[in-house]
Length: 437
Image (cartoon, rainbow, N blue to C red; front, side):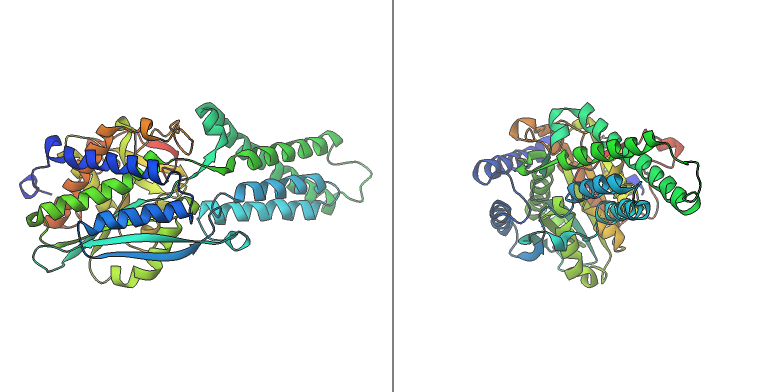
């Protein structure tokens, strides 16, 4: 994109009032509604509060309800922990049953967490959640394209190991992966012994391997059962009130600067139950996908504007399985450059963001994020509170978003443009880590 075709980015002083209002909104939600479990009364009250704020900006505001299993996404951990433990206990006496149990647990992990499908949701208690959708039309009244800014209102169940420290959660994840790989290997050997060597007088597998299998199954089960504390919901100031209020304030900016929006229908989408497995985004796309495809539409998810040094744009998502649209990645990255910030390329290898749901449905999308991939100490822990916020990150995030909307309104999605990876001139170290969702 020719630099002459891009508007000058907003200054920090121009955006400061909006970012300060955003921080005050976070403070209000935390003080009045507290942690927001998916499908809870506090999540609904937060969405109603956001709805009222958005009605001050535009009359086109809608609440869209949908059913959700609050524990849906992460319940695969205790479920497979139990499955793996019992499978490892019976593997060497009933090898085929043990192998099938471990294999079934792998299928559950892949579908429920790897692909964010609703495999075990039907087994869990159901509640009602909702999305907030606010629409700001262009000044001309002619909609040539559409841009959706997406945050999520709910907060997560606490991850015990990250509450203890980054080293503990990394070690816990490593233990789960290593023990599982060894267990499924031993299970396969046990099946082989049963089918090929069962009539032999010489034992194929030594007794100590059988004991190790049970020990590893116990370790996996204990770590999986203890990974998430479903009785504790975190405040979620960074993840993701920071993204939600930033989307609201960017919509307010363009309401106050109507001449800057000539071609674009700008939508602020605050999803519910993202932490339950992107359920709000799935509900929205199921309802609106046909309408979204009628005109050129792009999506920028905003998730966890916490760590200034980690401002980045997501290039691959959903456990590294989904690539986001290069045009949206370039749009966000160029907006960062315009604001004097070189955004890091982010690959989410464990978890996902709302942007994935749109990319999976062929709606161009990416996400603006800012979180230490170690992960950050506040990631899904009780310290994700007002004290952990970084006001400068929220301000710069909003500047980037405003500039991205301006560039999109003027030129649409770039066919080609600077991206943070794939070009020698724009080569950076890829940030890899946990989800920011």
